[in-house]
Length: 157
Image 1 (cartoon, rainbow, N blue to C red):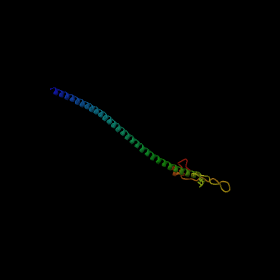
Image 2 (tube, rainbow, N blue to C red):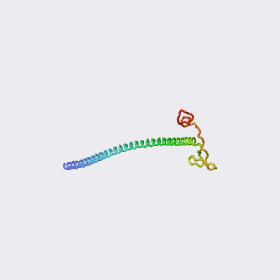
Image 3 (cartoon, rainbow, N blue to C red):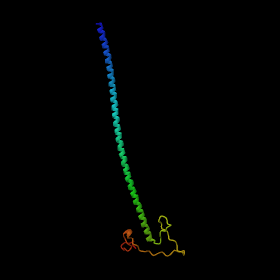
Image 4 (spheres, rainbow, N blue to C red):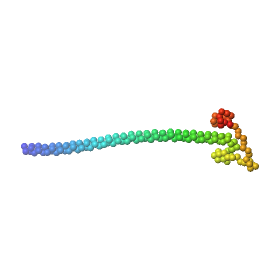
């Protein structure tokens, strides 16, 4: 019986060692599980932050794209306005030239004039300028809708 008692005692000690190993392994598994859960939660939070940042970047990119489109439209409008202004300036220059010709018909544009400026024609060979020409009556209807023969307009004629 003694041998049986010693055998039972050895078996009990062995079972205690096994239980301690199982308990230690269980505690390690629980710690690993807790650590894995914490890492998983951190990863999930990081993924949410990345998704939020990506969404903000997409929104910012769309705003930049919209701003660039608006700038492009503004530039096209500005270019069209500049072209219209140039055309208007050229038209006004032609009208001014025509009016200057009506007011002072002896002025003329010479090939040596710069930028279409009018120059006084050269003097006569005798050295004296000729008599001023008699003013002509011109129709101003192309410019004002009033002809020089219209007596109802006080500035006509």
